Image 1 (tube, one colour):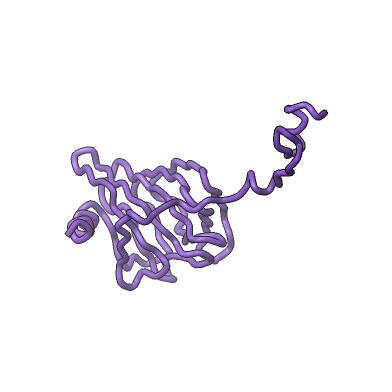
Image 2 (cartoon, rainbow, N blue to C red):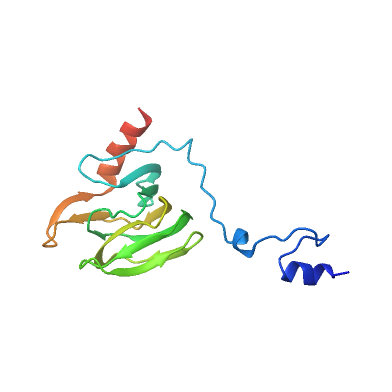
Length: 169
């Protein structure tokens, strides 16, 4: 008879009668987003968002982003410190030249500073859902850029307040 510890190491159930594939332990599960009020902004493809909270006094904007699988959002730069937590899928980050910079799997938590290299982001083989909290906002949270890195749009607290008002309406 096989010990429970050995059975667990070998991926078998306690009784040893059924084999549990190790891959099933690595299976990704979909984040249940049926109750999320997803919004989009015309002209910004492959992205949806839901604003969770805006605190003007503390200079904080919390939101969820959903980026389409195997797609990329607009080139942008972060204008505020931020933290991200990947809730579903994997977040892929790309340099301005389109080369893959980083892959953040589900469960990844990253804290970043304002500024930095412009980049695009997107989902892996499934839509990615990411929690973003933006802190210490003193101007734009995001600067959207064209191919020449010229600013084409900004999103700061006033823009997020307007989007939030439309979201709750």
